[in-house]
Image 1: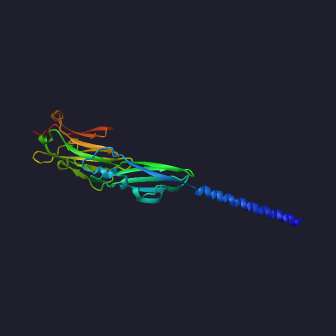
Image 2: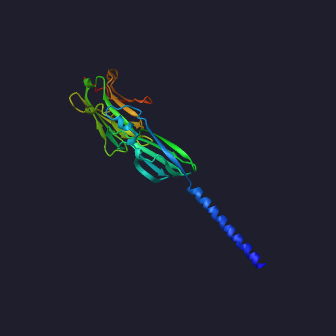
Image 3: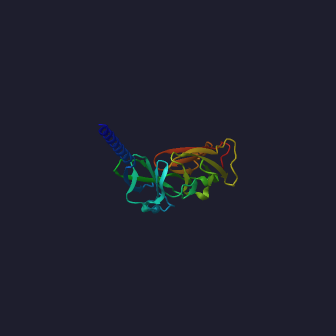
Length: 266
């Protein structure tokens, strides 16, 4: 009788151990299960450039791709053309896939930086295509001297400063039409524009009340044209009009630099 009870107890222990083992194995499977992804990369430049080789930016094989599991890098800076067609990832975990081409500098001529990013999760056994569209991730600014500027002034130097820059970037008439690219971050950045006018004799304009700076909100994927254009009507009233035109059709801004009425070049 005692032997039978002992055998029953032993059998129960073995059964419980087996069930616990199965449960643990199922738990491990649920945690370590995987899905797979394929990466589909495309580009959208948004605006044309006269000085940049757009074909290089439209060639997706030039782009570098990084994959992060949460904050942990799975791989970084792999060329898109070198990626495996199908990649295994853990299910139920947030991943972020980023792709970029160009240099992410604070400021520089012809330094277009294009980037795209997508955060995703997959279910166990899923096969998912992750589509990334890469767009300009910095702002572009050009300075144009229009109208009868030369009839009234010799030059107007524009200094541009953002929180990403160690020193201001200066543009004057010699730089007219140059494409300056400015780092904005994902949410944009404020730029302080400072203007220094010189008259036809080359002397600086230094008059009380002359408004020499303006703050402009720069956004990624925006192209800004700073048109410096004396308006003869405004000049008679003591003002030099400076128009900042966002040429992507989204926003227009007017910035006016006031010049006191007693300083009107003759």
